[in-house]
Length: 61
Image 1 (cartoon, rainbow, N blue to C red):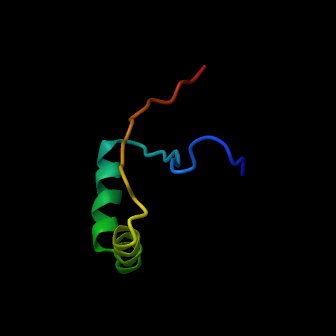
Image 2 (cartoon, helix red, strand yellow):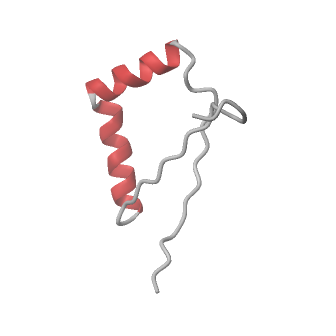
Image 3 (cartoon, one colour):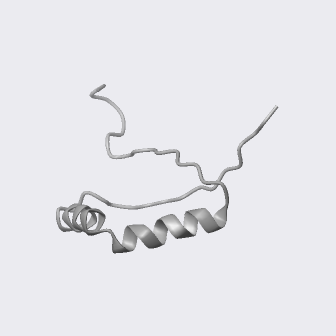
């Protein structure tokens, strides 16, 4: 990793067929014990400073 510049930003691209599929995914995350433990650990150790979401549409040619 380069030593200069921002080192506290991460990007992820996740694709869903539709909004209902995304909402279902989010609901499953809230009930997943490993996911909840992972989020709690990150929150307790202040790994997540901010969270932003941008919703994009796939461009097809």
